[in-house]
Length: 203
Image 1 (cartoon, helix red, strand yellow):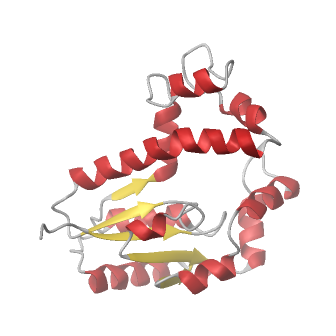
Image 2 (image 1 turned 120 degrees about the vertical axis):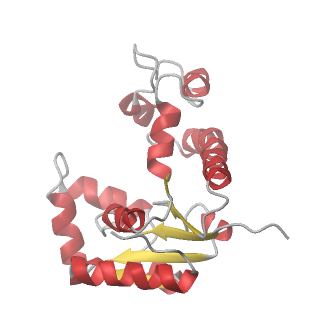
């Protein structure tokens, strides 16, 4: 049997501290695949998804050849069928990007897949373990509303599309409360790496 890295999936609802936690793993030398960044690359000018998105949803490309995410959002808004068609187009490309990442890091003892909709898309089946980041609702709300351009209605709309935090925590192998401070989170990340057999680098 060919050796491969242990795969840790990282997920959490909006405002729970997922990006900061992923950065901690990276500082410890764990290769990190950012699913959101991969999709942005697919939508960029010259990205694999751009021509396919334009073919399926004409008028969604910007003059520079990148997908205009605002136009695309408007094109699928209120249409489950169009949203499903977009997901059927993009998800295989995003999964291929994840496979390429794993192939590039085949010799690593541990890798991290940072996937916002990990449970919602069934990606947990590709992971050996799952870490869910969480925080009390009032902390989550304050973090999100402090973001530029974010309001309460937008926050609630995003949260409505995500699996409830409580359900994610029940399904997780590891749970990290990011409201307990940076030092606590760093210690928990280091402990998870040790448990999964990763080799810690000096932060």
